[in-house]
Amino acid sequence: MRPLISIVVPVYNAGPHLEPCLKSLLAQTYRPLEILLVDDHSTDGSSEICQRWAEEHSLVRRVPGTNRGANGGRWLGIQAAAGDFVLCSDADDLTHPQLVEMLYRAVCATGLPCACCRYDTFTGTALPDPEYTGPAAEAWRDTQPRQALLHDKRVDWGLWNKLYLRDLLTQDAFETGVTYNEDLLTNWILLGRVPGMAFVDFAGYHYRQHSASISRRALSQKQLDDQITVACRIEAEAAGTSLEKSAGAFRYEKLLYLYSLILRQRDRGPFAETARAYRERIRRDFSAMRSNPFLSSSMKAAALASGWLSGPYGFFCRHFLEKR
Image 1 (cartoon, rainbow, N blue to C red):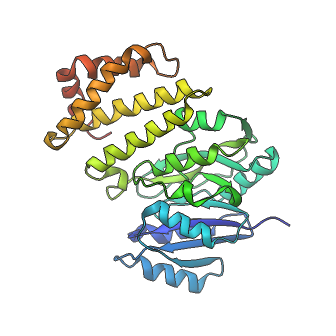
Image 2: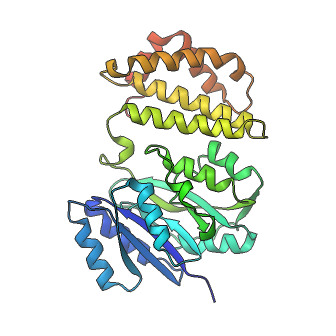
Image 3: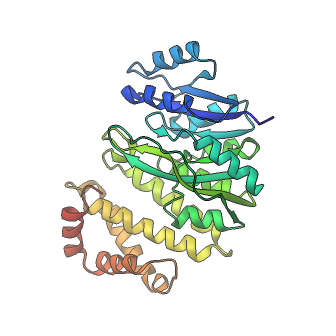
């Protein structure tokens, strides 16, 4: 008999995207399955949709939320989950009908406690899902999963394209005190607890891009602080291990990204002090990072431009990177 798998969906003002998301989750080929909707006091009618779907569908349960953000909602759902494995979904995205099936098969084939697949992005309506008949799962062992988390874009930082054994999931991994890059930090913690991770090379998760996404909101100081805090924590925890240089390159890339993010703002005044601090760190660390094998040539070129050619580099960021 196959184990029950729980899908946890934090819901807050998901609007017209919620019901398509739920339909795609109910279309999963895997059974037995439960879908937990963590209803986080929406004001746009999403709460009523959660209640109605819980009443009309036996696989769906509504879990009252407490306005603690996406990861806080995920933790509430995980606590209520009855499954042996847990997968998370955002309330405005779509899933391939074989997502859960393929991740579970990957876990079984490799004997590892978690599995991951690729994702793709879409706007409007996602394309129809073809049946997946591709290669079997790869087994990434030891530090490979954490390495991939930092540098392999197929893996991404999100929790939504990964299946985890329920026993691995603990409160400290989800309630980390950060709002931005919280998925990254949670996955870094969880992947440090496993002997390896299975990877299936198919796009099982469809990430919706739209203007209301949290990743597209106006820049704030907290957004900058959280992201650099997470990158620095990862670097500190990797110190003295085989991941030290990889984590160092990741932290430096994050610094370059955040500096460019400030330069893209039309009003950079509120972030002027932070920008100066970032530029100083970019310059200070460049000599060490120049020989880091995990830092690409393009990132090294960006470091030179941002550290010593800030005027022309700022023009480039504002005119060519504004919407990225």
